[in-house]
Length: 182
Image 1 (cartoon, rainbow, N blue to C red):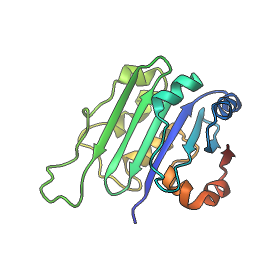
Image 2: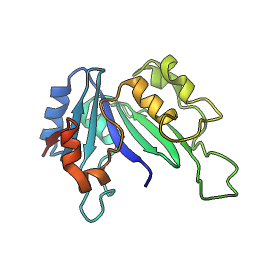
Image 3: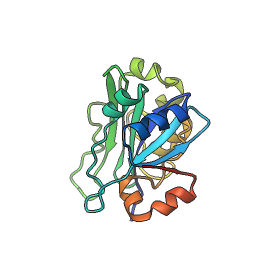
Image 4: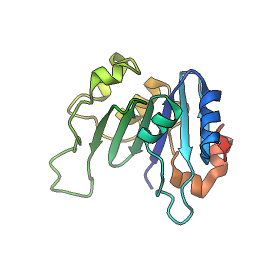
């Protein structure tokens, strides 16, 4: 089984304040604190359908008043992210390839090979991540651009972390330092 991860990364200098806002909004899930200015947030999925969520980067950015990056990595298929700012502006990047499709001409880069760098620069140092966004994209997988991107930015947690995983093994996230909310 390949690694698959889906989480929200909140850019904040006030993790306690963000967690308080999540609690006040009725959020249910797990958060991971870090010392790099990011707070990892993973909502619980429904037991019957762990991927059916009512959360989005845009909605979280608006309610938290902070930039939110939705991060997705599927080891065998590629990765993506979207960055949403509290004022409604957003940008995204996607690079996926179907390894089961022999006719695939190469990776699908969604909206294009490069997200809006000026918008990204409002939240992070683009110079540190630009190499992960350059075409042609690197082959997906451990050690590939998705992990390099997340490690370079300093996400507190991002591997094997998603609503699906929480629905099936919440204790693993808590053992890894996650805090339960709701």
